[in-house]
Image 1 (cartoon, rainbow, N blue to C red):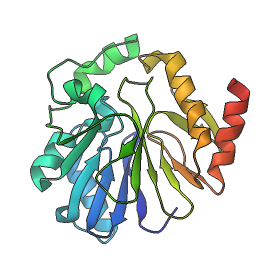
Image 2: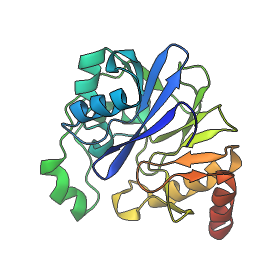
Image 3: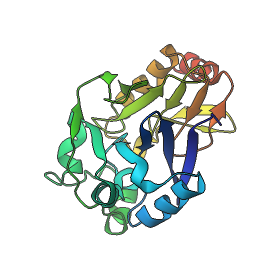
Amino acid sequence: MVDGVWELRSGYVHAHLIEVDDGLVLVDTGLPRRAGKLALAIRRTGHDLDDLHTILTTHQHPDHIGSLADLRQRTGARVVAHRADVAVITGELPQPVHHWVMRLSAPFLKAAPSPVDHPLDGDGPTGVPGITAVHTPGHTPGHVSFLLDRAGGVLFAGDAASAVFGRVRAAPRAVSADPALALRSAVRLAELDFQVAVFGHGTAVTGDAVSRFRDFAARHR
């Protein structure tokens, strides 16, 4: 994919590991009760879980923060999330349910509450040099994508978008808080500069990935 970036599978969802100068950064933590498997996957990259110092969360859904509390407890990693999703991540508010699929899966997808150490407001720095937050609301109010300044740009889209056979699509309407806003956020990603895009679900797009997003944006403007 890109030197120093790995895709870690956690069931049907992906987490992503980034090697930076002072250790490791993890984007999302996948499903509940997967911390041990993620630790093993990290070791297979030649690194150790103890090197993890930051966890960037794209959004509050339990298939993306399922192992967050466990990993934070094991490593002391700093948790970064958008302020609009913080109350759900910390357990102050329940997970919202927008569709019967979410209602059915709720008993099996329970994420333990986790503190958030660095709340984000809009676009801007994450506290990790070279990684910028891009607020992409709609799937959840505080959904965030992340842009890594490496190899022409690597976009960690989370669930703001996905790709099937290289064709970019928006987050599923049924599990999005505001589908119209989610679509606008996905279109907005086409304004960034990146060569590689990775997703919470679906296959990575490598090589001029932004052009695939621009094609998507053209279809929805």
